[in-house]
Length: 247
Ligand code: PGA
Image 1 (cartoon, rainbow, N blue to C red):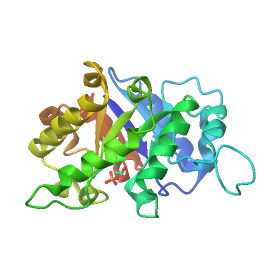
Image 2: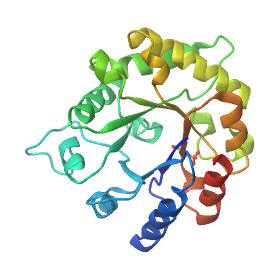
Image 3: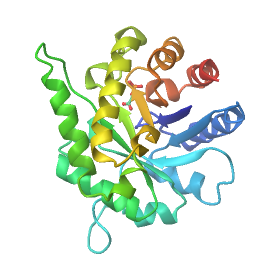
Image 4: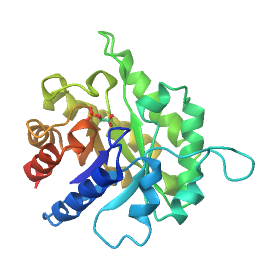
């Protein structure tokens, strides 16, 4: 089970970040548990450089810029040099800030070229009776992988995050049955984009109000390979309970 903690801008002090990282290291001793934390940018290299723990470090975003006169941009090469190994790409909060499918595709390419594993976020903002959201999802995945070779596509992790379920409570998260359906649908799309039977190995995570009370049921009922967790990952109690519920 892969659990990626998306700290967003929730964590606002190094002291808190350090405590959460130490906790993740302790929890990573649980069998079958792969833990990744995505701290805010200023703390990335502090945790990633020389990191010998089982916990891996993810960036919350990456630039399309490679180098040069680009004030404020953080390139994939820079993240890689800092010891970061994963990068969240296309999170709905970045897309809401104007990130297009074309930009997402470029970020995917830059990340893989620099040895970072992309965690591609996709998900509809709402559902409609005609199931147009399925086409929307297909479009997001297809365009994000468009610039990658068949081999590179195999490295991608998908995080299915319906926007309507993000930042709410477990009661408003997706149901295990609906999640199972979505994972099957995503697998079908991937099988068209990744040759042979290799797409069955792609890891598909769920994100959107995964909490200690629903994570186990969601995982059991859907065959999700893990979770991308926001608010429940930044409190010691909820994070501990969530990881333990899945161990
Ligand atoms: P949430 O966020 O767990 O707070 O819903 C998930 C995400 O946005 O990645």
